[in-house]
Each structure stands twice: as structure tokens, then as C-alpha cells.
Length: 101
Image 1 (cartoon, rainbow, N blue to C red):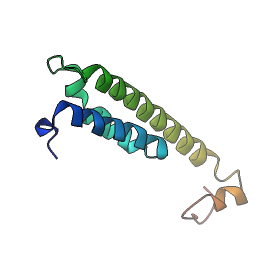
Image 2: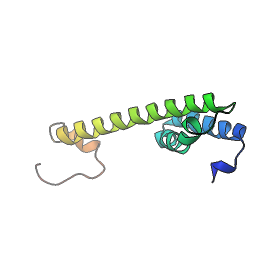
Image 3: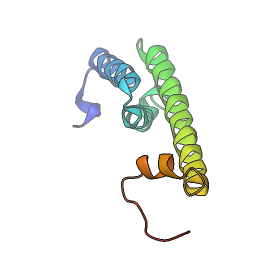
Image 4: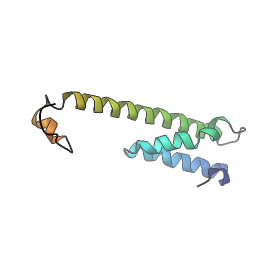
């Protein structure tokens, strides 16, 4: 989909949908929203809907970054402590490695 072809009000509606969709534990929508509408929010000549789009883009970027930090932190903690968590670590694993790490 080429957002250049959309009217400015349709861009705002789409940006808003992606922003609210990210709250449904779909942080990749925030990432897409932040990258897809970045030019519209910051580099295009001023238009009526631009301040709202800019607000959604900034919030989407912050939300995506926050989710990424949480995910990477959890992955590091899990990888470091899985063996010491014994049965709980195994229950949280998709693949249970054999042997002692």
C-alpha cells in the first residue's frame, strides 16, 4: 500500500488505527506505524492533520522501543536463569535442552 496516494485525513485514520492496534499486545504495529508515517510526520510540508500524526508516530516509537527493551530484558534474564529455575524454567521453555548448561 502506498500511503502517498491517500488523502491526509485517511492517513490520520490509518495512523490512529495502527497506534491503537499496538495496545492489543501487537507492538510490531507500533514499529510499522513509526517507520511508515515518519516522513509524513516530520518531513512533509505542514498540513492540518500533521500534528496528530506526529503525536501518534512519537508515541508509537516510544511504545515499540519500550516493548523491545522489555522483551530483550526478559530474554536475557530467562537465558541466564533458566537452569537455576529448575522445573519452572523447563515449563516456560518451548524446547527443553538436554544436559546441564
